[in-house]
Amino acid sequence: MRLTLGDFARSARTRLDPTVWDFFAGGAGEERTLAANVEAFDRWWLRPLVLRGAGRPETATAILGRAWDAPVAVAPLAFQTLVHPLGELATVRGTAAAARVPVVISTLAGRDIEELAAAGGGPLWLQVYCLRDRSMTRRLIERAEAAGFEALVLTVDAPHLGRRLRDVRNDFRLPPGIVPANLEGHDVGAPAAHARAEFAPDLDWSVVDWLRSVSALPILLKGILTDTDAVRAVEAGADGVVVSNHGGRQLDGVPATLDVLPEIAAAVAGRVPVLLDGGVRRGRDVLAALALGADAVLLGRPILHGLAVGAAQGVTDVLTILLDDLTDAMALAGLRTLADIGPQTVRSVAAGP
Ligand code: FNR
Image (cartoon, helix red, strand yellow):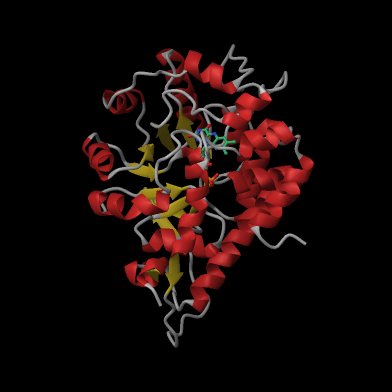
């Protein structure tokens, strides 16, 4: 019986080729950051308030002017056709069956943007890897905008891919036929080599102006880990930031996202939404992230685990488990709505008993 996201991870592992599992599960270097993301959540206790007549909690929120059923979106995850032939199509459908929340589609998605937009799911956002070939990046953005995508998420932590030692040891290559469907002519083979050849290695802050010049969509910057860069992002005109270390896959040795969230939320000071990803696996993790200043979180690897176990239904199940767990935690903590969540909702384990 699969009751937790951990149960889905274990089931997925038995179904996937070990090198594919390593590609999804692994991080960069010694995987210190990968582990830290998950561990950080266990450094916070919850502080429940009783007799608050909380009833059934309401998880709805509004971000960038759009109503979400819950503060949980689906992170951009490349090459989902590696897990299931339907790939991102199953993710979009499976998410829509669980809740109206955004799905962020990777530049390296395995299914066509137009096909995903026609699938009738919730809001779609496009994750942008800015390529050396700006005209191809621009075409991708224009297609997404024309298809009805609602926001751009520029990944700023990947001038190239981090050194993922599992993939180096496995000499990992995408099997023939697993290609980024929206990048004409790109046959990836080894993802790290492809990124070195194709990603713009020299981006600076002017890229935000460039994005603004090619699209009217809101722009979020994903991969912010310091208050300095958060302020810079707001000043550059970003409409939101995503506190992310790419699930520990880029620079090993950076802190857990939850650990840097408070300084970033303080620096942003409510001017734009602050999203966080990395290590979110339980309802109480969502609570902790919101208590420490996030407006919403993104879910990464567990979506791939759901996809591996049961295609669209597996994605629905993973999201439903997480959202039910969030509702349960809110009810038991005396939290009626997300507005009731704040710094008073958590207590640092280090503070002692
Ligand atoms: C990613 N991530 C990612 N990020 C991005 O901006 N563009 C991408 O194409 C991908 N692709 C990708 C593939 C795989 C297999 C993984 C595991 C991750 C990073 C992702 O969006 C997110 O930041 C992390 O996965 C969040 O951490 P958790 O939830 O996986 O711990």
